Amino acid sequence: MASSWSVCGVCDYRHITKPSVVWCTECDEGLCGECKDHHSISKGTRNHDTVSITEYQKLPSEVLQLANSCDKHNEKYVLFCKKHDCPCCKKCVVKSHMECKELTDIDDITRNIKSSNAFADIEQTLSEIAENIKRLRIDREDNMTSIGNKSREIEKEVLETRARINLHLDKLQDAILKDLKTREEEESNKIRQLLKSMSDKEKAIAELQTNIGNIKQYASDLQTFLALKHIEKDVVAEEKYIQLMVKSDGGNQIDFLCKTNPSLQGLISAIQKFGDVVVTSEPCKIPILKQKDTQAQMMVATTSMTIDSLTPSLQQTLNTKLSFVTGCTFLSDHRMVISCLAKGMIKVFRPDASLDFEIGNLSRVFDLANIGDKSVAVTSGYHEDCRQINVIDLKERKVKKTLNVNSVNSGVAYFEDRLIYCAEKDGIQMINLNDESIINITKTVVTSFTYVTEFRDNIFFTNCNNNSVTCVDFKGNTRWVFKKKTLSVLKTPFGISVDGGGNVYVVGGGSNNVVVISSNGQNYRVILTSANGLKEPAAIHVDRSNFKMLVANRNGTVFLYNLK
Image (cartoon, rainbow, N blue to C red):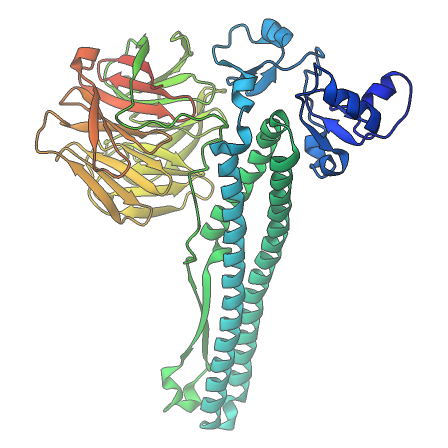
């Protein structure tokens, strides 16, 4: 924890109590007026940056409590471990980080941190979240007003109709008006609850923005860096709230209309009710400002890769001792999972390529996807007699849930508690892991060996019959199609994956290569060929956070590449 900023550290050491007037971030202590003068002319400290105590107090309490040195060893931080995402002193390195390969000088990371892209991204994201909440709040308020106005219009229509018919309809009139009021109140209450939630979020975002501004102006580089590690988690949570709100029923556009009974005009004595109040609900149409994808973890230091700068380097070759491999993926702890169609099993390998364990007797197995919590989802492939997806608990090493999808299922990808899977003649479908509801994304017929992946607002899938890669949005609208007449570029595409920059990786089972396609589908580059050992490659997976890539040959040989 930082030293007390209210008293002069130098005087306190001499058992003299004097209030501090400035704070030295490098000395990590406050200074009174007299000590400040000595500090500013002393050879060892004259170049230190100081800030007035009044301004220093403007920093958030979380920043003021951040330690500038290791609380375990009471030594200055000198390195930052990217693997463990933490600063280290020299003793920390010796005791806990000797095996870590990604140790960086902390001065290199904190240098120019306030003008870094990471800091700018946080500011931009906070601004976007605040703007999104404001726009959504206004939209919800307008909707509440519009349904109130529409309710009044319906009420007037009901009363005018009532005036032209017999008095015996009084009871029916009262019933529909009561229903109308009830529906209006129900929908308005839903929106009021959402508005209250958004109001709370606006206050929280405003506080974060104020903190960011104060950090940028008064905090040291190290404090700024450490504070960003805390704040970015809140930012991710707030942005996820926006996405969930838009996709939830609470963000739907509510409207009222009245369906008058057609028998009302001629068969008064036979009418049992005045009509029905119908509530229509449409998805929110407010476009959400989104500078970048925040589903992946925010990193202070990131590497932007283009298809021209990609230089995959082989790290390991896995001898899986399997045949007819059809799927591969990474786990969060960097273990690798391989699926085998021929043997109906999966194998889990440690980061050093040694076998961890295997799970057999899974009946039908095709592709697989990491769904978090040490679980994977495994599709059953193109067999008509097995139309289900199994969720396997890797800790218990058994199937913990079976999803009956009632269709052939091959390639699969995970997205926000949902599985996107290829369903052959039923196209691309998505199943909710919570309530098991299924929606159709596109009814375009896909092959029995179609693979799929997702990134941001897009879904990508292969077609080995016409040698193409297609990008669609979540409503099934085609964004682009990649297809080359020259089959040496991409023939019989199978596995597909996307990195953190939106680059699309596809294996050519017939061309024995890996092709990377730009995010807009316009450019491409062959980055691996048969010269790299590729022979009928079937599956590929890119770890977006660790810049690693798995490429699996159908014969069971699997290659692990570093993409940096």
